[in-house]
Length: 139
Image 1 (spheres, helix red, strand yellow):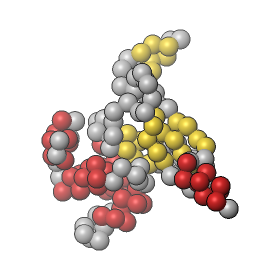
Image 2 (tube, rainbow, N blue to C red):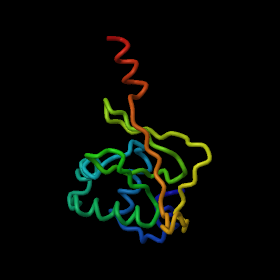
Image 3 (cartoon, rainbow, N blue to C red):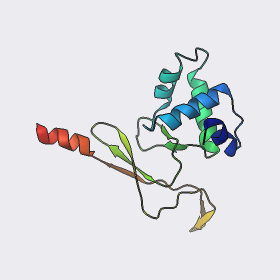
């Protein structure tokens, strides 16, 4: 699915900024922050502001086109992969990895739990990644 189709399939009107930010997320599966996206896109889009990036990411997230990740206490990260999966944060290098997660159900749905309506489910894991473990073993 291309960027325009992706936006339209989530009832988002395509604009130059929205298409650029969505394209960046679809091409960079690194769970970037607002600052990373802004720093990467601003040289080719001099009129782009951090506020525009933030507002666009909020719009994309609110419409279900991307996921907002709060796994890292310092930064909010974004993921274009909206399929059901979990995330792993390495406490040493700070990298976020996608993890498959069996039969999880993360779709937004009305689900009643003890009188509460559940709208989102997040699966976050934290530890030391395999690359940092290898590095430590070599020391």
